[in-house]
Amino acid sequence: MKVVQVEVSTKCQLRCIMCPHTIFSRDWVNADMDLEIFKKIPFNKFDFAHLQGWGEPLLNPNIGEMIEIAKKHCKVGLTTNGLLIDEFKEIENLDYLAVSIASADEEKHKKIRRCSLDELKENIKAVSSKVPVTLVFMMLKDTYLELPQIVEMAKELGAKEVIANNLDYIPSKELESQAIFLQSVDEKPISDAKVKAEKLGVKLTVKLTRMEEVLVCAENPINNCLITYNGQITPCVYLHLPTKSNRIVRVFKGEVLEIEKVYFGDVREKKSWKSYSKFGEIFKRRASLMWSLLPTEIPNLPLQCKTCYKAYGV
Image (cartoon, rainbow, N blue to C red; front, side, top):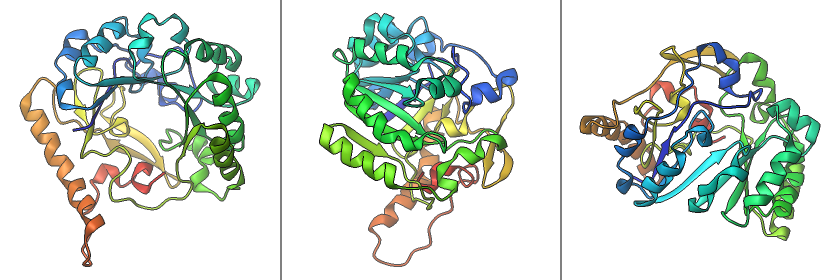
C-alpha cells in the first residue's frame, strides 16, 4: 500500500462552520490516539504516513515521538490548523506540512474558522523555511473567488503548493448551498489562479467543480487506508466520524442521509488487514476498466460510497 492516514487526535481548538466537529459537538468523542496503538501500525508497509483525521494532530502530546516512529519506515506529513506550528519543535522532522486556510480576508477567515488569518500567516512564515508547506484552501461559494489571492499568499509566505478542495462532505442541510460543484459558478477565478500560480512558481491543484462518477475516488482504497484514533481500520474519513453514534449523517443531492460507519477491525489484528484488502478488490476491478478495450459492466460502488461526493470526482 502507499498511504496510511492516522487519526492521532479528534480534538480541535477551533469550531469551523463547515466542520462536523462543530455540527455534531454534542456527540463528538474528543480523544488522542494512544501511543501503544500507534506503535502497532505497520508503517514499513507504506510509502507515506499522513498524521491527521477529524482533529488537530498537534494536540496529541506524543506527536513528536509518533513522527519519529513513523519516520523510521516512511515519509511523514500532517495537516494542521496552524495555531501551534510556531511552537512545534519537531517540525523539521516532517516531509510535508499542510496548513488549512479559509479565506484571504481577515474578517471572513475569522467568521469561518474562528481564528485570525494574520496570526496564522505569521506562523506559516516562521516555519516555511524549515519544512515544505502546502496551503489547503476549501472552496466555498463565499470564498472560491479568492483563489488567485490564496496563490499570491502562498508565494508571500514561502509555501510551495496550494490545494483547493471542495466541501465534499456536507454535514448539514444549511451548508449545502456552499458547495460550488452543486451549482453553476464562474470558472474565471480558477483559470486566473492557474495562470498566476504558473507565473509565481507555486504548484496549484484544484478539485473539479462538476460531478462525474469516477472509477476510483481520490481516497483510493486500493492503496490507502485510515487508522482511527482508537485503532480501527477504515477506507477514509468519509466512512468514519469520531462520534458516539454508529452512523454518519451526510447531505447528498438535497437529501439528509444516515450511513453506517465502515470498519474492518483493529489495526493490531492480521485478519483486519485481510478484510480490508477484500474491500479494495471492488475498486481494483473498477480501476482495471481504465485499460479495457471492450464494453464491460462497471462493478457497483459499495453502498456507503454511492452517496459520497468523493465518488463523483469532486
